[in-house]
Amino acid sequence: MQKLLVIIPTYNEAENIAEMLQRVMELPSHFHVLVVDDNSPDGTARIVGATEREFPGKIHLLEREGKLGLGTAYLAGFEWALHRNYDYVFEMDADFSHNPKHLERLYSKAKEGYDVVVGSRYIKKGRIVDWPLDRLILSYGASMYARLITGLPVKDPTAGFVVYNEGFLRQLDMNRIDSIGYAFQIEMKYAAYSHGFSLAEVPITFMDRQRGVSKMDSSIIKEAALGVIKMRLRKKGKYLKVPQSISV
Image: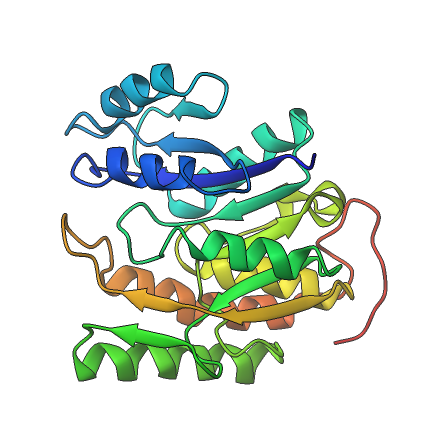
């Protein structure tokens, strides 16, 4: 049986995390979960610990000293997963903007042989629910901008609902990922694409969070805008432990 790990980074997600973990545990494909918590003052880690005891060996908690950035949380989770030989590693938010049932959809597509599979809002049958028009325009515009600058053939490059296979993560030099905020999502896809790894998208319905507070602010948008330019200017072959020379 293949080993599947879902990484969920958290900061103040006490209102969501118990239900999210329960929903993932109910899925038929026997996912494990690693919660990477950045010292949430609302007790998120304590709730995860209680749920961990309910599902021994399936739910895990990695606690960090403070808010160190989304990208570093995922990179820490990737290292944790590789040390334990997981075959597929998933990224997902804790706030139910990502439907846990769609993990099965991502996994099914990854098993076709793709290195990276993206849960996409911007392909046929993909949807966004409960977003105001200005946020829709900002998100879609950011995706178009990232695609234009990087050449990514992915219609939702900013998406944070993703699965990577072990082979790609083992070849990736994680010290060369520069982005620590939401630009991290673009950079991971760009790292895969620029080295010739295969990418695919599956449609998802993206829901605005119903509980808790969004972490999005202007500094995140600025980092993403500047980050994609830096990515495109980097020399090819700079993301892998054994560099390759595959043109974009």
